[in-house]
Image (cartoon, rainbow, N blue to C red; front, side, top):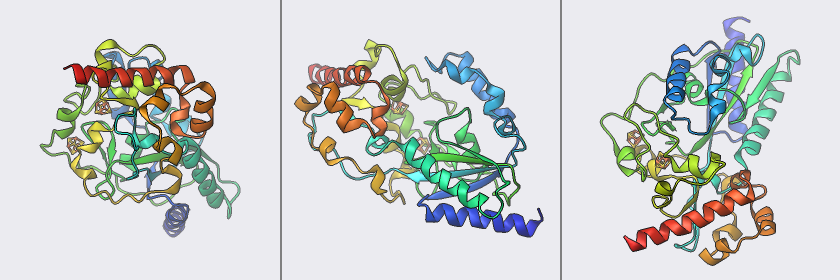
Length: 319
Ligand code: SF4
Ligand code: SF4
């Protein structure tokens, strides 16, 4: 493919991504991410991945798209905002993280990426591609940086200088060349340490990594066992995920993120009182949360989280 065709392909991909509602789209050359692989390996060796032992497996696959799609040439990275101003009504109710307000983001992002792939293949059905949204062994943040979308902040979440960090990333690997964006080389955290100071559990390390064992997001989403006692009193009422480090980030002060209807908080969930949360039965949970991001955890673990969130509010009162 000549430079003119590669340029046209990239413009077509970005144009279609915008039509599909993506807020960001960058394109990187597929290749090996050796440095990121080493950092991941060291992080796992230090035990910071907590119970996420799957992160230790297949590190070479995580850092090499060619091992996920034969002949991979291009990694398209998209961003979709989930910021929403709508809040839960009862200030004493267990608190949901913003990313869990709306429909299951894996389904929303993967659906849009599927349509993007269809458009890419329209003029040439021989083009092959694979899509990922938190669903495969890929270092999404590293690819987002390679595609020029931003940098991972001290809290380890990707930040874009125009829209902040309240967005989901999605990846489309293609076996065709395109025109590539320049990697985002800067780190715009500067001397700021606001997220480190705001983290309720001290989970943010000094080296731009987090200790998942202490992180509320890990404890309330990925953790399959009980929540550690020393974490419960620091939950601050959070029931699923945690936004503390993103809320204080100066790059989120004037976020350019628009609310997408898919990620608005469901009115019924927004209206739930603390008592209704505490009496949520299996059937209510299925009805209310089945299609949402928070519905990813099993009912028993959701109830574990509700009890821990309520207990944490009691810890605060007795301090
Ligand atoms: S999500 Fe919460 S607990 Fe985890 S690093 Fe951020 S502030 Fe700390
Ligand atoms: S709060 Fe400050 S240090 Fe943390 S990610 Fe944002 S800019 Fe970086």
